[in-house]
Amino acid sequence: MNTSEVFVVMTCFNRKEYTTKCIKTMAEGNPAIHFSFVVVDDASTDGTAEALFEMKRDIQLDIEVIRGTGNLFWNGGMHQGLEYVLNSQEEYDYCMLVNDDVVFTDHALERLIARQQSNPGCVVVGATQDGNDVMSYGGVKCLSKHRAKFSLIEPSAEIRECDTFNGNCVLIARDLLQQIGNVDPHYVHSMSDYDYGMHIRRIGIPIINSEDFVGVCRDNDVDGSWRDPKIPRWDRVKRKESPKGLPFKDWFYFIYKNYGVLNAVYHSATPYLRILLKR
Image 1 (tube, rainbow, N blue to C red):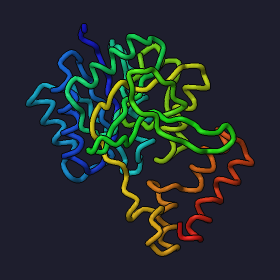
Image 2 (cartoon, rainbow, N blue to C red):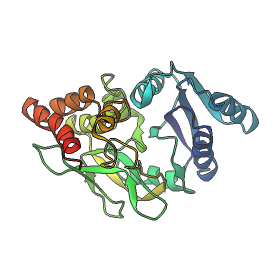
Image 3 (cartoon, one colour):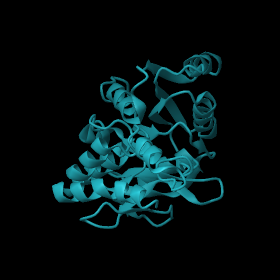
Image 4 (cartoon, rainbow, N blue to C red):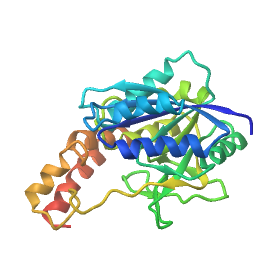
């Protein structure tokens, strides 16, 4: 494989060990790729930015650190990072959206690029596993045209089209990125990646699964989240409405945009019913 030029966009906040390990496993495990990392550091206080500058200096990695306000969360950070890439005058072949808590396996991203090159015109989603070979994130299938019901699409040698994706590892060719544009700035954190994938499908660009797992990324734990039935109801409501929960404004907007107003009303009410019934 000839050397591919890849812009990697990620956002981070106070996860120095995760962020640096993610970057190292990408760069060291895929020698046939030249990476340019665009990292939006959302005002971390744990030395993340300083560690990235050290990596840039000591091991000669191409890292651009964009300082955030501390209130960007995933969507705001990714919007700034993608804006940088979309306006860049540098030559590159691909843009890759990455979550900073993915630990990549050797040569996984080289294989992901080979998959795209065999299927030009497609966006390719890298599937991750939880450490026990159980899929955690990746391509997503919409189970209904009228309801927000989803399931993950396992990696496979067989090409399977996805309806949307988790944004943990998504490979987009440069010409496609120019057609797709940026993530919707309306979102704060949740649902932005699903919405971005649905936008990609609406404009007629296929999304396909990866052949194998690209790395390890543990799924978000239900314990302690708004979905945890052991937590008192009012605490669950407060956690649901937090930026990293399922805030009403973002959730209603996502359903309204992708499924219409009646479904938005229905789906906006169901999380509160779930909390009321302690489910």
